[in-house]
Image (tube, rainbow, N blue to C red; front, top):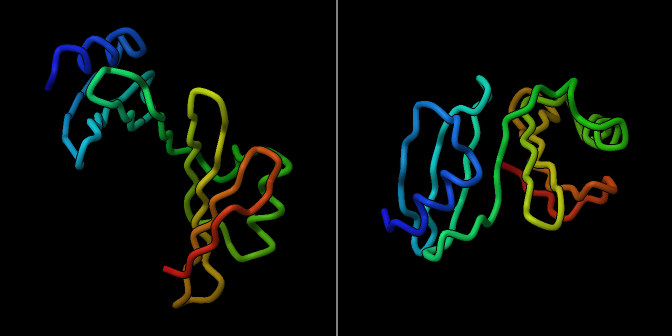
Length: 117
């Protein structure tokens, strides 16, 4: 990993544990635990934070997000995506036993993407 990327990560998450690095295209990704919560941070080659993805329990989804997701099906999984200037939520719902749907929503509960998995 470039020193700039490692420094960028250390500046944001200096108490993290179980750190695992990978590179996906031009993006550096690090899987780690921060206060016993699994997170994934993504950085560019200059060490700039692109986003942090945090697994969150479905019951912890904001009150405006939860009903929109539940309208599409049973919530199976949810991820908070924190970018430097905005928040997003990726929610996987089960519409029926064989059909899963991924919803990407902004913090205003607007569906930005809907994809059948």
